[in-house]
Length: 249
Image (tube, rainbow, N blue to C red; front, side, top):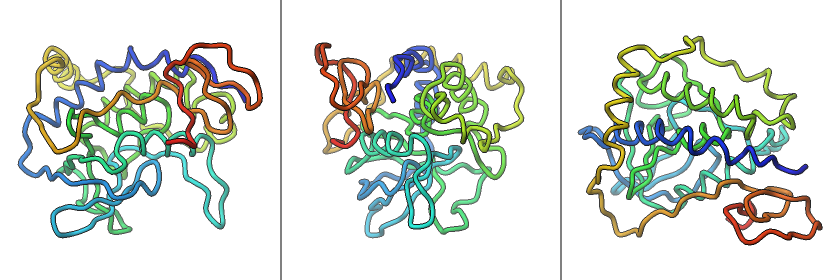
């Protein structure tokens, strides 16, 4: 099925909020750890080398489509979501931050963390939400719940990713958190303050080079053509753009 060009429209409107989230994490939290991603196991889990130990990490605050398993087929947009996470963090340095309101580990023993790409930083969960490749989820309220929900509402309104009509059969299974339609005054003020600083330099350096901007749309089972996806076998008449073939990532 041909992807909609609306996949690209949510990025600009949501980026100010995403930048705010990144700056909140970069402000300086002593509990943060840095390491290099070894493998991306799913859109919201990966393995990382932290000093002498290897850990499995689960993104805080989001639930992304599940990849295929022996007992279950892949959920809608799982390939695209996985490709985006791989594009953002696979074999890159990232910074991990716990949320004091949540357990340090989930029931499977994985670290529960906010994850930021270095250098930058860039909030991985926020990127998935903004592009419609995850929905907001956690066992209890967490620090960025309202800001993440704001990004999810934007993706829903644009009908991108898992909110596209092609995924309609699975949308009813995703329960949105019970939140007001507007941010609380404290959260809104914090975001306004952070947005005013969103061009500041963070001074984070690693042996890795700069992280390239991710693709504007990921094409799985279709062909990248310009800024959108077209059916396989169809001739592309557009100049090179920001669309990427998921299987090449």
